Image (cartoon, rainbow, N blue to C red; front, side, top):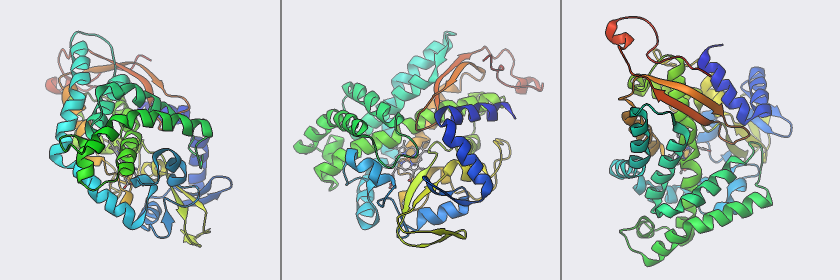
Length: 397
Ligand code: HEM
């Protein structure tokens, strides 16, 4: 097993020790497998797309799907707890927050400070843990996106902790998780609700009101963006740097194709949950109305081959790691802009050594809890001298 694969495996098994092994074993049995107590597990890209695009047959709002998990916390009026015409109407309104100009501005404002601190320390030869840097940056970006004040950071940490504690197979949150998440969200959205009520369109909540969102929808948007837009990046960006490191690439050699390939093999949202609305068949397997359908995104995208940054997998996955159909990731432009901003900041450090790393244990979204790096002076880059060998020093852990 190659270095990148060993570490990625550790990241997956630390997050989901039982489930990861179970899913891998299930995938070996076929593209669609019924697993008692879990649901109908899909591990093939074509079938996954079929499920995700047929929203009449496979809903997000039926038993065992995402809405059951999140409605008690976020309310019923969010993108991840709605389907059909209501979902489409809300999505159209919210898409105004993701124009290129808007995305560029929130990225720049949110990431500037955490990245400046990190690059200053790298330039001084210090060790820098990239996980808290990305967490601070991604949190600040979401605060900018929804117009929350900087002192909302504590509430973010609390809400993130609730998210981390959700188990992959749970159909609903525990009473304690729901109460904690609701309290954190209520504190977080206080300022947003005040701005919404004032209707001041120089603020984001005021603009959401102008876009036609109800107060409940604006409040739900705060929680939803927090839920979808922070841990995914905290998971992906350090894993991207680690993957590149493990195949001998520094940040200066992380091209767009490498980013796409890393998204494919990490697939930060490991599963997408749906509920069958009617009886039918999926790849020959019988599905009954009310069945939970677990689209194992990671297995679908991984099956296209190992991490190959120089010859990325050619299977037509169409960015399945961001979903498919009407619920395709709304934040993709923001995520890609954030990744690009971090890489731009790190490019002046072509020789980054990963000095310490620890996969996070028992979390929902597989990630590192620590990924410490140090810039080693690139005396003479192997590419410049034509010499073979890695552009980064080997891992010492
Ligand atoms: C690398 C980072 C990210 C990945 C891999 C990712 C992945 C995904 C996936 C797979 C879905 C579909 C879920 C499903 O169909 O059940 C989704 C939906 C969504 N994502 Fe992302 N996401 C990322 C970053 C973000 C960011 C930064 C935001 C910003 C706020 C965001 C906002 C959303 C929203 C709002 C939805 C729900 C869309 C809908 O239901 O219409 N995501 N994401």
